[in-house]
Image (cartoon, rainbow, N blue to C red; front, side, top):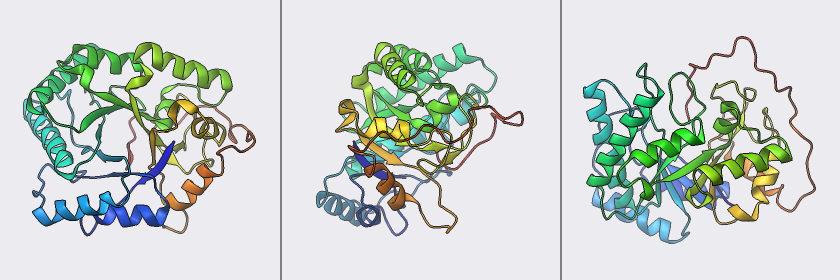
Length: 307
């Protein structure tokens, strides 16, 4: 696996490359557009040139995480219109920088129901397909934790969205380990790990799995609560990550960290990349360090910074 992290673009998109080098990345994810604003200033020509020249020195796989405001299944026509425009802009900006992928949460049906939500998200992807024909950058739908009315916590929901969308065959999938775990997929046992990826292959096709978000979880399996933990410090433990980094099927797939800062308030990427690399060709580690019991006060409506 090509290991990396979600790096800041403070000071310009090109600065993410230097931060990635410092952390020891082989892939990076950035925000090519503000994560919590509808408006975005166009890139200046020199910003694009600087990013492309800096990226050329490393050649890493590059991802952008789309704005958290975007909801492709929004019932409100104003929000839906803004979401479609913002996503198209995300793709244009990523194409301008020369990125490989844009990662997106499929959306939330907000009371419409799953079936109607899936249809609405598919219609939005059909709209995007028409707007972005001929682009090199590829959109990836991210597996979600299933909080509230969020779509995409089951492989079948992702497949249904892609099957209904015009051009659905051109989109891929990003597998988030924390989200898969809290949505109910068992990655903690050998049988569960194999069963999960067998199901992914059967429902979606492993060729569609283009990237991983590598995150441990602060909440138990099936909790539907999305809280990222540092690698090995959460309910997943080290074992699933040991399997992933040693799985030949994903040897050339980018896997980026979205782990929170530690007690020192500093980014945890360098130390978590070291933890992951320490698992490569290493002996099998111990299993999950915590009880997999869903707490009674778990609130599936909670949100978080990364997703």
